[in-house]
Length: 345
Image (tube, rainbow, N blue to C red; front, side):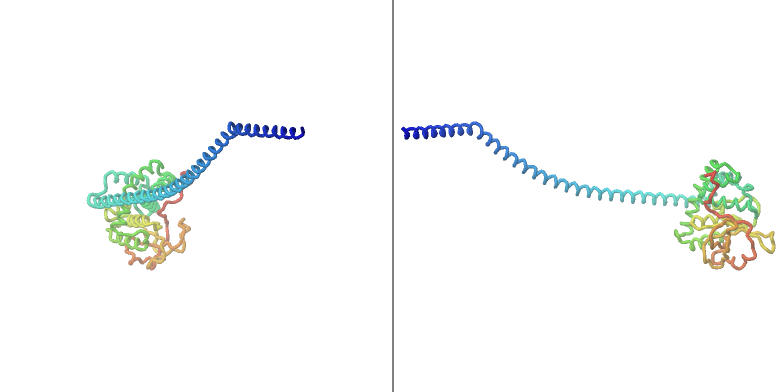
């Protein structure tokens, strides 16, 4: 009876295990196996996606490198383009400057043959009516001031001249500025072209500029007249001659266009106070035969190395060092773009 129980018990256990195994197998077959297959599929998909991400990351890196190279090339190309455009603009400006110089030089020779255009002559006549005492010549402060104004206008300092005129109560700034600008647009290019092309003065060579300008003015025809209206530097150049003050104007204007500081002075003979002389003062040291003032600050002229130049003499023939001590300064005015009262600015 006991053995039968044991066999039956084990038989029950065996039946249970077989049933459990069959049930687990059925569960695995029905539930777990599909899940495992799905998991394996997702795992393969993930691996594939990971490989794709790696591939695209490498491609993106390559594209970024290509973009960087392209950007660098583009930047270099743009720099080259900018440089070419700047060079083109520079060449165009040089060509324009040369055209303007050629036109100014053509005007000079045409006016030497035919005289100044009537309109320019009219503008000069209007400008002279604004000058101190109508721009009349004489050994006076008014004549000196008129000469400095005319030199400044022909040099292109129209704004300074117009403001100074208004400050002196001799004109209206807006009208004077327009008038002086009209004159300067004709005069300055012509005088500059004369310096560069006719006198062949290289830019920046001050000593050579002085030598060539004095060579030109000393060969002019001079008159001793102390009456009549002043001519401007351009008018003096075109006419080929003038009085002492007009020669000073021309020399001062031509030198000023070479960036040399110049002034015009009225001197009086110490032994004969009724004997006067106009001269050009030039701020350039160590010129042979030239007298240099210790100081001109009392006349509002700053700086040192201001020497007396006579425009009717060449640079080699200057001899002011031998006679200047017998003359005294009556008045000096610098030809430059000077300061004007604040209310006029």
